[in-house]
Image 1 (cartoon, helix red, strand yellow):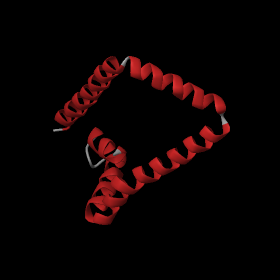
Image 2: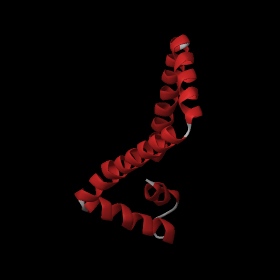
Image 3: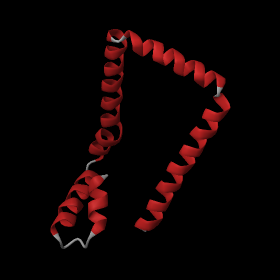
Image 4: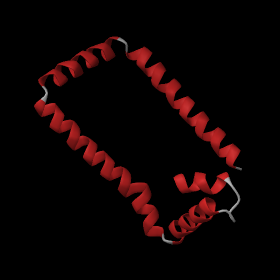
Length: 104
């Protein structure tokens, strides 16, 4: 994703953009690399994050108490949290659409 941004910052004849273009075309020419990039790397991040959370959950008794308090607060304020989550999602989607429109 960073190569896509660097590629669009300046003309392709200049060096950072040229190298980024080579990287983008390399990924585009090999379908398996897109699978690794789009599925494999997030999966590795998810598994390692879950392992880290489980490690800390077993070692820190205050963490389970804090999570119980958070869940209690969430149950009491579920409508407010739902509105906040939808508003945040709308902001993220709007940002992606604006960046996509600026790229074209």
